[in-house]
View 1 (cartoon, one colour):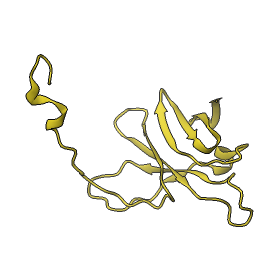
View 2 (view 1 turned 60 degrees about the vertical axis):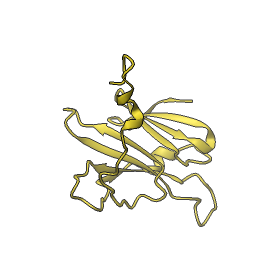
View 3 (view 1 turned 180 degrees about the horizontal axis):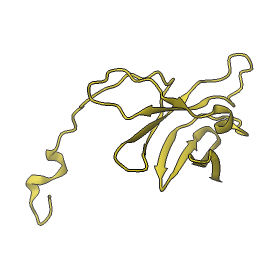
Length: 133
């Protein structure tokens, strides 16, 4: 569409419309990634949250969290996580574990920790870091 000089089908003719909104308990959600199941017919939503500095110590080492949600239906209004990734494992060794973004690609979850300017690549089936920059 929009090729060959046909200006009537340009992207400006399409409207972005809200289809559904869900309420989630993940604190300060900042990143989301869709992780398909092994059949590719369904999957899970991984949503990164920010727990803020530890109220007792003031440290930022436990800020990052990732909640896992079943793929919602249109009729649902509120979602609850079906599981949560281990924050202890996820944040290990980081001075500030805040997560800005998530991306799932070729079986690996890429986690951008923006305050330490770092990316960790996780193998979700093994719970192991495969790369870190």
